[in-house]
Length: 125
Image (cartoon, rainbow, N blue to C red; front, side, top):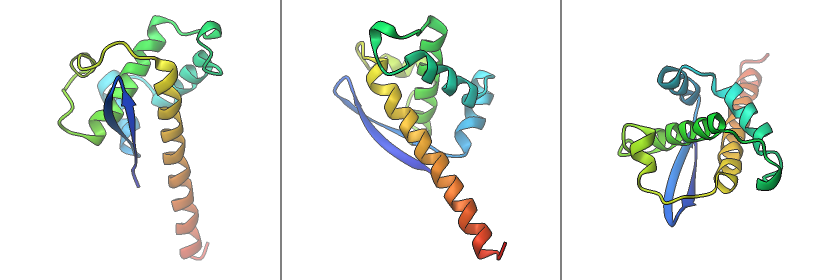
């Protein structure tokens, strides 16, 4: 079951979608593991304190790629590349958007775990 969330970025309401398809889409498009990248981003951003974060250029690129995949998954009209998609925004803070995307992904994972648990109960296991 997919989970969506609308986040206002630079005055533009942007819908993001998390589902079981996102890791596959991310892996096919970028050749990376979304779970490893999310862990790296969480560690890099830390507590959301810009002064004490460890974000490097690669982490910023991972964030942009992740955000684009989740936005494209929510809305097929989103441009076909992260670069084109990012063109619609002025500069915005990763520290405001990334925690919300991580929360959205966490809701998706929790929803999947609950569905599996309920399936096992219904199957009598």
